[in-house]
Length: 171
Image (cartoon, rainbow, N blue to C red; front, top):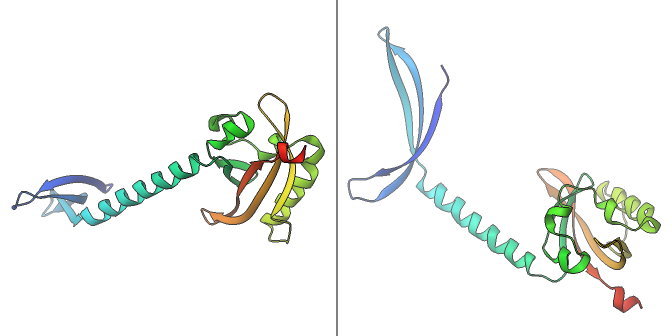
């Protein structure tokens, strides 16, 4: 028999509501079916999870209102891109997510950017701040300044960074 896990609100004697987790399993007792269960108060855990979710939402709201583009790349693929990517390159975040970052790098800079990414992920020393051409949605090229560093995502290396449009400054 397979254990079943349930979560629900329970009304206490004092009329307060507690979040409960119930782990139940059917078994045999005196040759008759019976249910054995464990009940646990998970109210505090649920409150902490909700606070964490609210905090994460506030954090991403701040990132999404930054003019620069904040990003997270793992395995060469965008895992997060802030909404600033629309102002900077003309893409919606959905256009970028789960796509290889190298697709958005100008061909003249691709080898350098790809090599620096690979070395950074492998722990080698590479500049954390540099410039390259980025391909906009309208196929124009903008000069971008990148600030990047290695981080961990799900216990695997990833790159977190910020890109800024420096096209006007370079002209």
